[in-house]
Image (cartoon, rainbow, N blue to C red; front, side, top):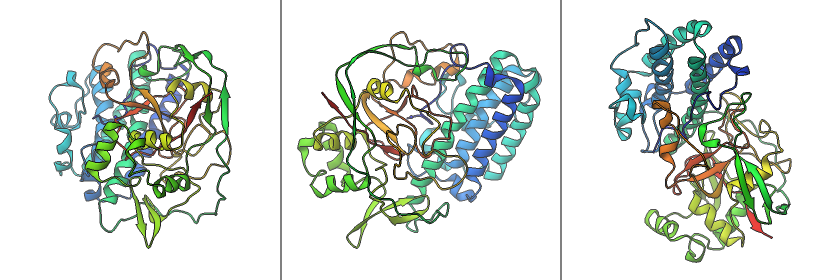
Length: 433
């Protein structure tokens, strides 16, 4: 997302539903989203929540404060008469990339903000939540649209908060666990990948701007796309299949790698997915439940676009386009699958049902993150959410085990730079027919 999240988009003028925007429903929605963020951070010490492990990640404390700044700035400041900022110095600290909101603290220095403390950030959240919930009954439609947007924005940061904590804890030689994972029931290795054939032709993709469903602006306008005959895999690639790629020299054979990817492999000495390590000759992985033996049946995760593309080349196939992916996923329920339901263990798990298009891991596509035909960002600061990031990144689809349930949908477009892999990113294959 050089951004704090794979960022949200325009308010309800073209994307926010009226039904989830009524006062009673919205009150519960705000309260639920805000409570989950606090629950995710509850196990953290002040130090855990302050440290920044790399430039792509942000401290947990910053996520808690930034999402609060969003509501305070775009809803309370702009739409509630007489509202007074909790601390007039803090917008400089907790603005992310909104140029229209003025100067802000450097992204790579967020981990240096030892004050305010985690408890002070919690007090900030309580102050803003009280004012926001009190104001909901009298907010104009435009402001309630921004509240809905803010909830979806915070859900994006909940996923980032979890994955950033994982990266931070992986940097600790003690490799601490955030949660205790339940005892696992062994799952048999899935059978060979099945292929879902498509005859090709013109399909419609993208969000249609329905007043009944929320969508970020980059998901529309809905438009036609021409597909050639192809087939898409009915599941994602597993850890066991990825281990075979490694054993066959996949990370040492330049034939399978894009030029930039091969340069990245050599420069950073990449030889396995992020968080993988061999212990006594066997692969292990580090997760939010600590370091454990690798589950060969579970979806491979924490791989970059470069790795995904190289694996597809090694397998003799390719990555799907985002249009192919959406056409295949459109008829499936986006609320099913392995998503984050509460503040508990987050981990991809072996697929039981097929085909499965949602949850577990974000799936790299071969499509560049660019605007759809007719895309126009909205006016004002919220117009900075998506449009200005449509350069140099690739689209991912489907959501992950760290995505709050109900946040993903068939038209949802996540996006990252091709070398990034600290998110729960995996691989679905496709081939031409």
